[in-house]
Image 1 (cartoon, rainbow, N blue to C red):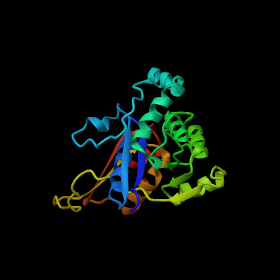
Image 2 (image 1 turned 135 degrees about the horizontal axis):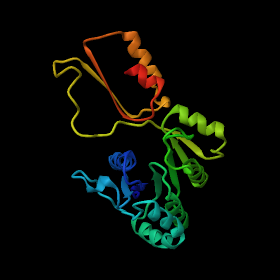
Image 3 (image 1 turned 45 degrees about the horizontal axis):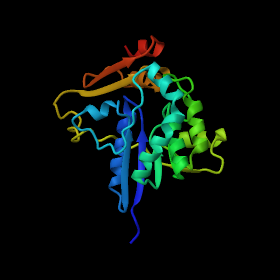
Image 4 (image 1 turned 120 degrees about the vertical axis):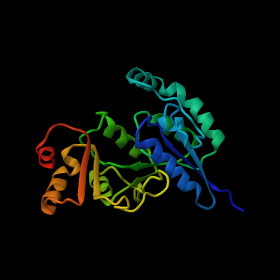
Amino acid sequence: MSEPLRVLVWQWGRRGAGPRFAAELAAGLAGLPDTVALLSLSRQAELLTTASAPVCDLPVDTYAGAVGFLWRLATLRLRMPMLARRLRALRPDVAICAMPGPIDQLMASALFRLGVPFLVMVHDASSHPGDWLPAQRTLQRLQIRQAAGVIALSEHVAAQLRESGQMGARRLILASHPPFAFGPRPKPPRAHGGPLRLLFFGRLLPYKGLDLFADALRRLGPREDIEVRIAGLGPESHELSALR
C-alpha cells in the first residue's frame, strides 16, 4: 500500500484573504483520498486569533511592521536552516504557495534544500492599482522561475502568463477560485420581504468596473424594488459621482 501524498500549503500574510485562502485550500486537499494536507501560516496571522482558527502545522514568525519586514529580509539566510529542519520533520512531498508574499524566498530556499518541489498560485499576473508593495510582481516572477509549476485562477491570468514568457517549460495548471466557507449558506434573495439589495464593496478604483456598474444601473432606471450600497476606499472619480 502506497504512502499518502503529503502536500504543504503556505501563505505568510497577516491580514486579508491570503491566510484564509490557504486554510481553505488545505482543508479541500485534506478531503481528497490518499492525501495529507499540511498548513503553514504566519504566527502573526489574524486568522489564528479567531474562534475558527485552523490547525497550523508550521507556524512561522514573520513581521509586524516595516522595521520587522526589513529585519526578516536581512536574516533570511540565517533562518533558512532552522526552517528546513522543521520542514524535514513534516516530510512534505510537494508544497503550494497559496498566494505569493514578500518573504516567500525563505520557504523556497528551504524547500530547494530538501529537494521538495513547489507550485505557486498566481492570482494576478500583472500589477494593478492597489498593490501595496512596488516589488511585489518582481518577487512573484522570481518565485515562478523557482517553481516546478504554476496554478492560474482564471483563463485571463493564464493567457497573461503565457504571453509574458515567464512560464518556460513549467507546467501551467488552470484552476478556479472557489467561494470561501464563511458558515451556513445565506437565505435566498428577498427572503426578508423587502427590496433586492445589491452590495459593492472593496477598492473603489476604476479597474473594478465601476463604470460598468453605473451603466447597468442607468439601464435599469429608477427602481423601488432594488437598493444599492457601495462601500470602500478610493479617490473621487466620475464613476463614483455617477453612482451617487
